[in-house]
Every structure is written in C-alpha cells, then in structure tokens.
Amino acid sequence: MLLDVTDLEVRYGRRPALRGASLSVGPGETVGVIGETGSGKSTFARAVLGLVRPSAGRIVVDGTDVTRFRARQWRALRRTGVVQYVFQDPLRSLDPDLTVASSLAEPLRIRGVPAREASRRAAALLDRVGLAPASLDRLPGELSGGQRQRVAVARALIVEPRLVLLDEPVSALDSANRVRVLELLKSLRNAGTSLLFISHDLGSVAGVADRVAVLYQGRIVEQGPVRDVIAGPVHPYTRLLVGSAPTLRSAAAGRAARASLRALLSEGTTA
Ligand SMILES: Nc1ncnc2c1ncn2[C@@H]1O[C@H](COP(=O)(O)OP(=O)(O)OP(=O)(O)O)[C@@H](O)[C@H]1O
Image (tube, rainbow, N blue to C red; front, top):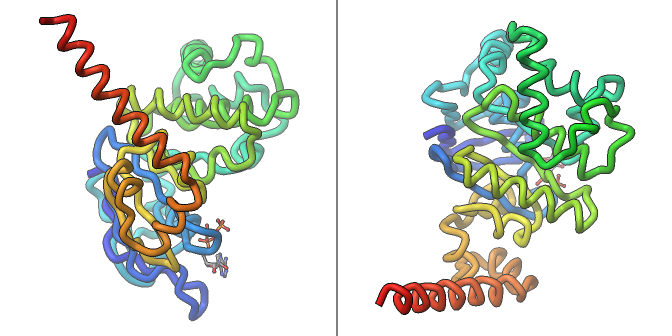
C-alpha cells in the first residue's frame, strides 16, 4: 500500500475533526474522498502530509509509519518526494515571481539535478500536462486558472512521486478548465500514478477515481468502487449526494450500456 490510514483521529483543541477514519491507496490506484464542508477532508490531507498531528490512529506512507514523526523526519520524508500535493488554489503552490520553467525545475535543482537536465525534464512535463512550450517563460499571474493548476500538477509530478494528494484541485476552476484538469488527472491515473483526490463534488471524483470514500462528520461512512457506491449508496448522506446528482446514475447506466454494446460489437467482429 502507498498509503494506509487506520482509525485516524485528529483534534483541534478538544473538538475532534476526524473520529476514526480508515482509508488506503494501493499502487496505481485513484481514490476519491468526498464530503460536505467541515467533514474533515482537508484535515485528512494535512495529517497525511504531516501538517497536523493525529491524537490517535496510524498513518503509513509507502511502508513507513509516520504517525509519530517529528518535524525533522517529515522534512527528510518530503525531500524524498514520495508524496506530492496540489491544493485548490494553484497560487499557493507556485511562487508568483518564478517563471513556469524555473518553478518546474526548482524541485529538481534542490535535489542536485544539473540545470540543463532539469530544464529538459520541465519542458517534457509541460507537454504531458497539455501546455504549450511558450508557457515556460510565463509567470503564474500571466496564466489562466486552469493553466496555473496544470503547472501546479506538473510541479508535483516532476520529482516522480509515488502518490499525489489533490485537495479540491478543480473547485476554483470554471467548467472548461475543470474538464481539462479532470482529463489530465485521468491520464495520470491511466499512466499508473496513485492519486488521492479530495473533493466536495461527487461528480468530479466519479469520472476519475477507481474507489470513493465518503467522509461524514469526521468518519468514513462508506467506501467502495465508484460504480457500486453510485448504483447502491448505503449511508443516508451518500444517498443524498447521489440523489442530488441524478445525472451520475444515468451516466453510470449509460457507461454500462455502452460497455455491453461494445462487447456485443467486438463479438460481432471476431465471429
Ligand atoms: N486550524 C483549525 N482550528 C480549529 N478548528 C479547525 C481548524 N481547521 C479545521 N477546523 C475544524 O475542523 C473541522 C474539519 O475541517 P476541515 O477543514 O478538515 O473540513 P473540510 O471537509 O476540508 O471542509 P471544507 O470543504 O469547507 O474545506 C471543521 O469543523 C473545522 O471548523
């Protein structure tokens, strides 16, 4: 497992924000975490990144128990680049005074990669996230929100992490940019990168994730393959979520219908 979280509890003062949340992400898997505002999604992400300390439970990242890690150990783990993150607001992950080229090359330069090699890898990655080479010389402020978010994703990927944690990566984007970034996440998943995709929007997660976990009042109340959760939600909150997005059911049904049609068609061509 790349990430194995068991019975995680986090308190702010006396108030629990997470009350025993368990979730794992396997190699090459994309797991969505959905929940309403205040359900503990960001707290979950912060705990996995070592930014808040759990009061109980266990967090194992790529085989290492990090639950009681001290700041120095977290810094060492972050330097390995095994887990990278992308936040809702790409301006938080990008230095406004650095061009895209410098922003992408910086994590490699810090790890001792020579300048020419770092630039070459930055340019190659830009292509992978669907941005034109001309973007390399731009500052974040000269890009659209969607372009900026794709740069933030590229920056997270440049150190070849095993797990990328995305906290509401499309919530701040308009619908066209949202679709583009979701397509990018799908292509990462298809290329075998493990993703933990946190969102309040089941619709965004449904198209990308293999599995989905529903966080409600600090507990994961339901999890399973996306298709199963949408087709047969068990917890009342999940039912509410699915019920308020009727297009999801019909999209799932449409996909199933298309899949059986494709199966029939391929049988026809091989017969
Ligand atoms: N630094 C903090 N100090 C005190 N309470 C906090 C702090 N951060 C979050 N909380 C509380 O913990 C609970 C969970 O917050 P969290 O930000 O994890 O939820 P969320 O699901 O990410 O919400 P949103 O979708 O609005 O970002 C909320 O009740 C919130 O008010």
